[in-house]
Amino acid sequence: MELRKSTTVVKHQRSLEIQWAYIIAQYSMRQMTRETDRFPALSGLAKQIQAAGLAPLVAGIPANNVLPWLLWDSEPSKRRHSVYIAPSWSWASFNCASKISFYHPYLSQPKMSVESEPIAQVVDIVAEAAGLDPTGALKSGYLILYSLVTMATFKYDIHIFWGSKTSLHMRNLEGSENMVHNPHIDYDEDKENLNEQKLLVVLICRVKTFGVDNLDDADDWDTFGLVLELVGESLYRRVGWCYFRTIDESSTDYELREVTII
Image 1 (cartoon, rainbow, N blue to C red):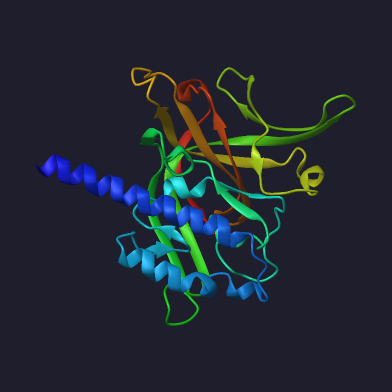
Image 2 (spheres, rainbow, N blue to C red; image 1 turned 135 degrees about the vertical axis):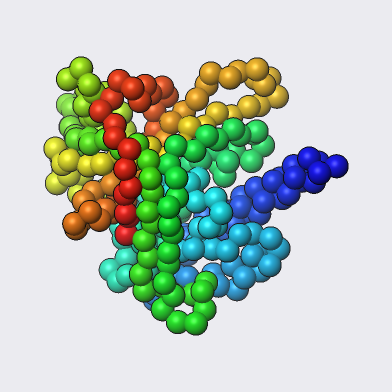
């Protein structure tokens, strides 16, 4: 009975998180009169869904399940607000009128069973409210992860036949490179300026999904990572995310350390 109760709780939690992701996707496409209304406009719904059992929200992210919520993208615009709204790891840091989509299968594939193995550990997550409402406007925030990290070089190429292509090149222990094609980078026309820039890749989690017909498929793992740029002494900003079909951490120059993202 206790196991059944736990399974029910887990399913209920996932259902609430999927509902919240859907609310964000719909809300993010609306044009706000003021950029600073980003969180206040959602405050009522945030309180309702937390009352229904969703974990407390930190910068719009459930505090007890942070990792899946870091893997988001904004389309068609990838521009940040002109004033401070949220830390770079939060979906709310981007302009309104562009749809926010979440890519971790836990949120994006509600009909699939998902097994997720965390690589990163959340050491601390903080969002300081600008006023008395914890679901309202923010004035600062940070996230500290402890995980495997490696340096990567971002490359932006324009080919006469295939158009523009982006990639991340990571050094391995043998001196050659592992390459990730088309990483989800939070820039549009600034990609050319990013060419050859050194970025940090932080491994987040490994994920596999199960449908009705592939319950025994235990080898189809994807590895997800955050892409960060250095913005201050030991401080990083999220500039995107990437995933690998397969990855051998032992063959790549990874190190295990804390990373602070603002």
